[in-house]
Length: 212
Image (cartoon, rainbow, N blue to C red):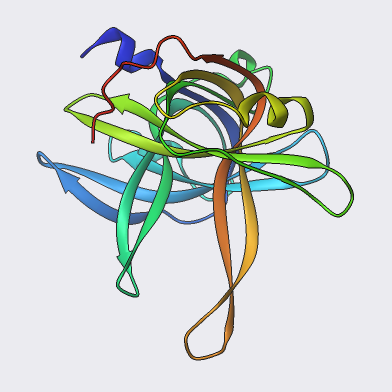
């Protein structure tokens, strides 16, 4: 597998297994399961993150067990209410010792800006910028990863052009929001995104094909 594609999307997580594994799919005779991992922040908040794990690693994901892993943040589209919804999950590649992870939630990605950044200011004058990053993967695929930045990072990202190469370090966070359904009912849903702590934009390197 291409070494660069292995290293442009790196995730390090350490947390407690928060759900029983549920069968997801099978690829080339290997079964994969979905499970939730409860990962603490430096504050009192906890992010509950979706993990995809193969049957080979499943023995490490007993409910309530502390797990430290390395992997990649993956995305795929799911048809929901006749609309395409972006689904995110951390693909677990290997289990590591807890001591190897000084921060329980770290993601490092290198990709390309694929939509114009959305910059806004909250009523409390907090600057926020949302940007979608395409990260190339093996087998002619890309992962489309939503990122959110605040303050100085938000001002830095807001002028990034489509196709610009971008490097981001941050953490994966979960966030609940209210979705109004066609029936008029309001449903609580969970969104996942990368919270940006460090960013570098290479606007000169923008002639790179994004794999779809």
